[in-house]
Length: 192
Image 1 (spheres, rainbow, N blue to C red):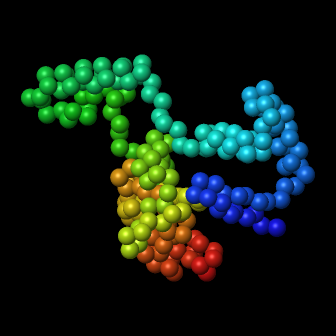
Image 2 (cartoon, one colour):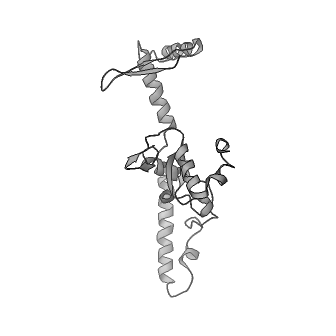
Image 3 (cartoon, helix red, strand yellow):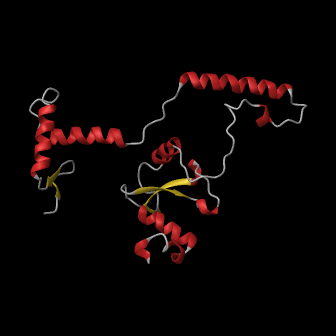
């Protein structure tokens, strides 16, 4: 039997579904383990606890700032700027005058998206597909993918400005629009 959701009011929804014995036993075990923190916990209490804890674990985390490292880098940048000003008459590029720990050499374009950029894009797009059609935004929050606005295959970089969240369907739509259905069919079995 499929689960059923029935709105009861603007703030409450009735949920009905069947539990296998194994899951019911696991819920009872959780209830026992939580008995000191939530005495007499109801199923609703246990579900709320489990959902909050799981969301905390799965949501993209804010970056941790290493204060010591940022101070060291700031001092190195300040020192490098002073050196650059002193050598201004020299034709040595600023990048060559900076310490190696400060210089971010532009590596070959890669599909890799750093955790920091993923967090920024997720936060900006509010964990929802960013596709908009006729003024309405797609409401999908499941099976989200990071999509390059300028496709990677056409030189698009993995930067916050060039990435967006898209559900799988809208990500594939963008690929078909850019490369054509025939080419994308090689990568998407259901399109063959």
